[in-house]
Every structure is written in C-alpha cells, then in structure tokens.
Length: 313
Image (cartoon, rainbow, N blue to C red; front, side, top):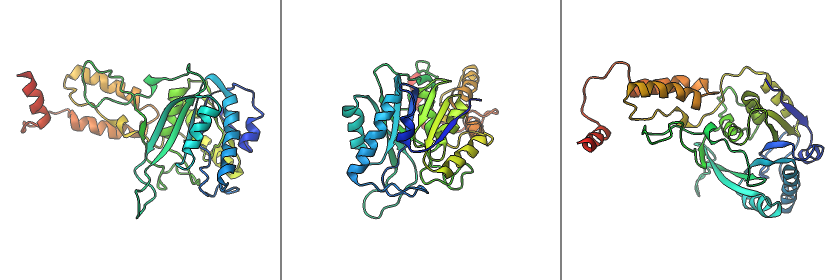
C-alpha cells in the first residue's frame, strides 16, 4: 500500500518549499471564513484579508499543478464568485465544472430557505487534462441495449450524506467531508500512482481515500491535533468508504433476460461498489426484491408492464 505524507505547517509556506509541477491533482477545502473554531486557529479574516489569503494559496497551487492537472476547490457562498474570478482571470486556468454537493441535512432556518448544498469549483491548468469517466459512472435506471451499461456520467449535482456523528468514521473535526465525495474526484482526475495534494488536510479524508485508491497523497495541516488524528485514521482497518452516491446501489429495471442480468449484476459490483463492500448487502436486497429467485405469484400488471406490453402489440 502506498504511503501517505502529512506535513505540519502553514499551507502557503509549505507549498512554497515544493517543486513546481509536482501534482496531478489538488483538492482544496480551505476555511470558508465563517468563524469556525479549528482548535489552534479560527477563520475570522476581514473580506480583503480573506481574498489575499485565497490569492496566495491559489498562486502556489497553480504553480504546483502539472500541465494536465486539475484542482477542485470547496467554497462557501460568500466567496465563491471571488474564488472563481481568481482561478479564471487572475491565473488563467480553464473552467470545467461548478459542482453542487447536495446533502440531506443541514442548518435549519425559520426565515429563508435552509442550506442543503456546498459548491465545488473544478478548474484545469490546460485544456489537456486527465478525466477518467469510466471510473466514475453511475448505474443506468433502465436496461436498454443501446445504453452504455457501464453507466452514465454522474453529472454536476452530487448527493452524498454528511458524515453524521453516529457514523463510526466520524472524526472530531467541524468540517469533515465524506469519503465518497473525495473518491469521485480522485478517480476522475488522477491515475494509480499519481500525486495528490490537499493543502488544508483537516480530518484526513483525502489521504485516507488516496491510500485505498493507490495514489500518493500529500496533506498539509496547521493543527498538530488534526495531524495526529489523520495519522491514526490511516492506521485503521478499512471496511469500506463512509459514504456512497445512492445511485450506485441502483439496480436497472427491465433486466428480464436471465443471462444478461447475471452477467450485468456481477459487473455491477466491480464497476460501482469497489471500496463500498459495506453497501453490498443493500444492493443484493434490491436485486432480490426486483428479480427474486422464485417467481412471484401472478398479480395485476404494473403500469410500467402494461406500458411495455402495449408497445409490443
């Protein structure tokens, strides 16, 4: 298993010590400047101060990316447009996607709409960049011979649950990100053996995912307690990532041909559930519900079956 590297220190200062064009991928989850307590520091800069901080670390990130490299940046609503402007106009990077991470629970509001998403900007250093679509496809909803049964593009709205406090993988960190979220970025924008940088390591999620996906992860973290937390996390036994896109457990409808169905279902586990062995039982229950070993007693046709039968007449 590839060893991961954790550096204790300030992100900008430590990035300045690294050679240019070192990393294939950078995943950055900087403080959103919302006053959160990160143990030995709190993100309470004024507006101009935060923009200056952002410009400094992005300058180093741009320098450290290889020519075919990609950067993903998490950001809150207050500074997202400024961050876009820096990446686009200040550093001349190439915009690819504005990803919306939708989660099901969040802050409640009595006046106005409750927040249920975070934004993630995806930029590349040049127009020639790594993107492994086959590694991140999601299952089709219906089986059709003309469809690519390897799956569909997941799109730019991603649904992953927060790592709730009852989850055994929950760390003592205020902004822990789900592993499934990082998994998709790493699979899409790097190859096995690639170098991945997380300049704001936090709870260590990026490196934990790199460890399981055979990437060389480098994380920079200012808080020594979080460094220790991440080191301990890397030593734990792996039983599956702590989150999954709900579509990955989806079983295509209309897989009536038994030979096609059997081959597809075996492929499904390899294509969509690698690293998610903890989700296999739910998937198998869905399969049994849709395609039971013992045929069910004849019942009234469903609306879908009636529609399909009508088409064949």
